[in-house]
Length: 356
Image 1 (tube, one colour):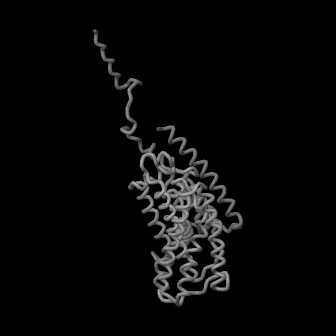
Image 2 (cartoon, helix red, strand yellow):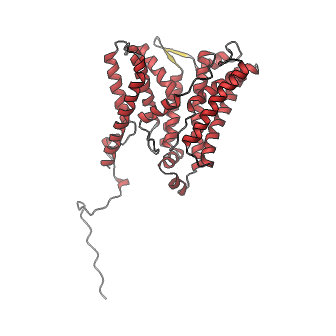
Image 3 (cartoon, one colour):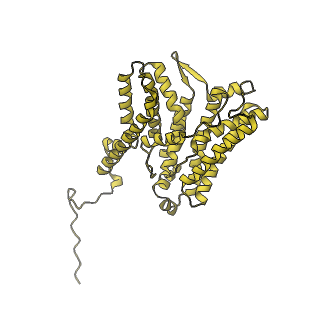
């Protein structure tokens, strides 16, 4: 019985050589091309340069502070909405949930003649409960998140108007500016910080904090792996032990927390709240996330990208004013930015996949 001679080992340059791609070090260019926020950053630079040329006052410090404020009020919601989209889901109730949060704080404090902070905490609990409701309904029933949260959107819209008129007799809440705790709550949610003679709203700090926390969760924790896994394929994620239901419920609670922060800012900035506000804003949050590189299908995106998408929104909305153009064209420019960003993000992903 003759022994079979072993096949000669392929030379290092041979095409038959197999190397585990996980051991290969990607070049900085490949890593950059693979970042989901690359397209939005390129778009943000282009928009910045465009309005810097088109509007003489755009580069003034006060103007940039105004742009950052507009971006932060959107970005506080765009960041958790982006995480939810990475997880493969939507929340169409996000816009009116902001108003619901503000209404609960105001009406509870006024009717119970309690310290304003009591109403703020009650609002936090109720808003988080709405997030849990969305998550549980999604994970325990068959309808997609579009239908589930559309139902929540309609219910909250009706409740906001119905309860406000029932309790206040009008479509807006009563003033709580003279109540105990209002000043300290305003300091937390709606104060102004003066740096170098320029006024900056505290929402910018809330926004930056959410970006840091969301980025850390996505890139440095097991939960971040779960979010990407659930968005990439729910059944496959469940098969490898990912707690799909808990992950999705947590993501909806994250959106609810963002709605609570935004709602408190709305309340303590203007003292009273109109019950019909917030309708339609959920689409703007989704647009910011998509401009930032999030895929509608889930499994891809970043918190930084969503923040850049919100920054683009802020630059366009205020840049049009600084350029003294007709603001009626704002939605047109926003639609153009959405299409261009989507095409650019698609091209970047194709290039990244081709270089792997």
